Length: 209
Image (cartoon, rainbow, N blue to C red; front, top):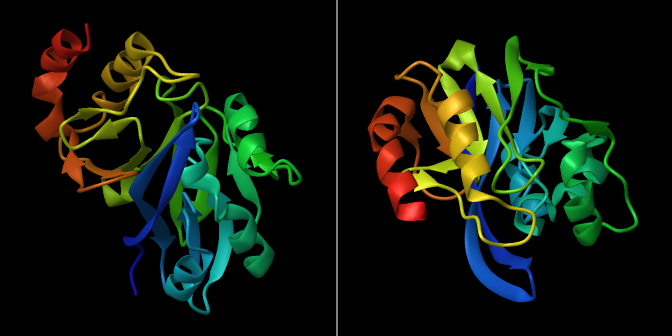
């Protein structure tokens, strides 16, 4: 099959600042019928591995370190032998979820990952957390934004290790600079496009103050 982006929806609990929330997460598989990159292995390793099937997993990339985006990463890594990658600015969040197992590598701004002939470029997009990143896949006219940009606005701030002006700057300078037709694959909920979200930037700023 041609290279594509597949979604697996898993369910579980997001925990931060002493609060727990029931959430549905999007896990993304980027690749073809031979190999895939797993983005945000969340909640249910069995569901992720079932979707992977007999394909090779080149890496497990974490858009940020909140537990609901990394809590199945170690189990998927153990089953596949793939390295787990995360921005080092979110290592403290990773350590909360996995205190006994370090990640295997760093997702730093400008780094490139390859899978199935595709190149995914890492864009540092802090704000939802200090180490949040997005993954731009120009060959598929797509970007995977984690919890930085959703259909309808930016990801949550106001909790520990987050900042509203920072997430707005990340969206304005890094994400809205992408082509308007770029499909936005989000950490939760439905996909959108850069062009659909860009006109609403000032509304988000006004709403956030």
